[in-house]
Image (cartoon, rainbow, N blue to C red; front, top):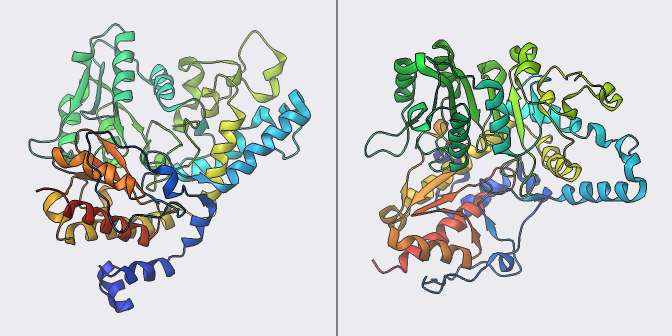
Length: 460
């Protein structure tokens, strides 16, 4: 049902704060919020730069109350179960030492500590058994995957990305190109939006692939663009690239756990993601990869290897020759951090209580509600520009708000002082992400009210 229909059912105006409360009372996922530790407002307030004006607002969240946390696209909140899981591993280390690798009181022997995460991770990204692995960090995994899949020839050597790809991705790809003795300025195609537009049009992406496909070795796009929040058409890009003989991969840092994915069915060649945003694994959390099962036969020849690439049953025989794990877990080269792994497991345990389709349904409504309130607020409509696509199917839960440069820091710092946590991107972008796992409609309404009060106090 649309927001209008729900408001009619509730006999309330969409902008009425009671409507937000009504939506929360009728939210089947509302209990999941209790699974997370939400920082208190008093703990997130910080000293603003001395030259930035902080504008006090009446709706400032009290120090002893949970803040309005709309920053899960940067760092997700801590699941309460994570503290328990980490404590269990510390106890096991203290009580059993090295024996914990094979004999574990909680049935998580360290030698196979990645295995409990694989099934749930496969569900989240739409993969089959054996197509996902949990290892390393995101940028390291980009290097691992390009070591296996980027095999430039004199004819086919280019890499296609979006012009505003996350900087770390660009650094990694340029270094990969240089590693092969090529010039990144020639081999890296960076596709920008049309003049005056913020987001790429799908037809422009497909056109470049069609026109230059013979020279493109790898198409490597974000699933969701980190700055604008645009959700790319993964199936269409994949089909277009493969039709022209390109390999197609995705950085899903902002897509995994945010939008439903069907990587296997879409035929994506490979993908990677971090886990500390929507999967709530904690700062610097361990990352993941996907490789389609059709590459199982070639993986040993092309991928990097280490002793954790070896089959578990022969790993400790210390053979001279690798006995490779044939599928994607074979991309591991070293034993993963146990504490990082169980931190990820804490987030995945919360995901196991719902589904990506249920989360997406709430997310569409929650983000649509945010968009409605922003665009119908008399103060904000004049100052704030939303650069995220208006089509709900072309975005996740993030809306990127552009403010005039002169207002950017005063607004951002004033939000923080009021007990609201968002994300800033210089020079003038505030990214706002209501997360369906733990954010409420009341969070969204209160945020817009506070933002409106701040903007009303600006010298215009």
